[in-house]
Image 1: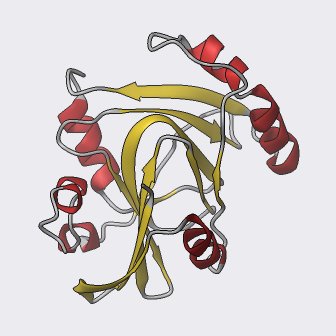
Image 2: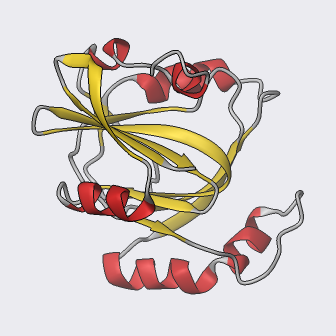
Image 3: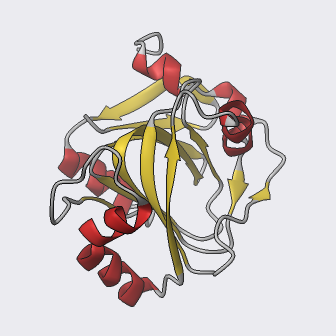
Length: 187
């Protein structure tokens, strides 16, 4: 189940919780974030390659390319066995911005996006079938957990793909990790 927790940026121990899809969409739309659900045009085998995955979601991807001018798209696949999982996690855990609009669609697994907007932190647990956008220049970070398990389509408005500008803020250290959220130690 997808989940949204909304915190005051200075009070990571208190939050408003939204678990219904319509509630999540409504809350995120207030800060210009798109949240929707997609389904593949056909069943994907567990070992589907990038071309097969992109083909399964082609109409939705083409709509986003047309509507938002995305120039590049790829598939990222991280598993607990990935040799660079710790380094990648640390990079994504630091608050950063992108000059371009960012979209992630979770084909499998899950991940936790944190959006730092208007003195609030919006923690969005995305699961299989969820699409989330991050507007350009929105401070955010992403936690894939100590043992990542997700496959996601990434869309970029620039041909360079993922280019981050780190804010230098330590705010991410104040909020619960994906693993803490999933094990219930944050409730």
